Image 1 (spheres, rainbow, N blue to C red):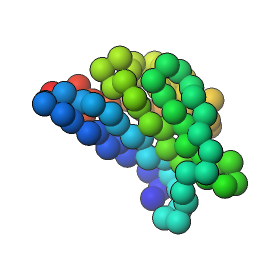
Image 2: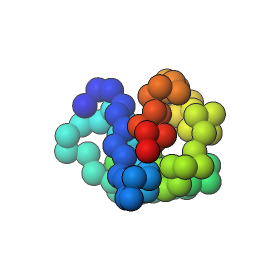
Image 3: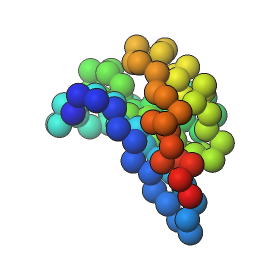
Image 4: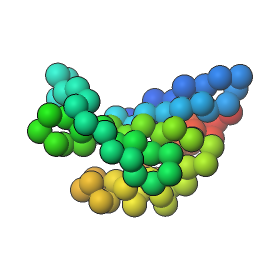
Length: 89
């Protein structure tokens, strides 16, 4: 996978949790996690490369907070339209 993509889990029509998959190899698995902005957990593979960001409080997430973390990790920021699935319900 070469481009980030967002997966959202809904319950009763509301976003319950989400996961932003970052570019990675198919065999990459989470080896270590760290907490970032409130409500964000970063997954790293064995080599220390970030492979995804768990969004534990989607209703409270702002594009600014997520993009700050993405920039710190060396990734391009997302647009508000990239995050539309979080606001869909």
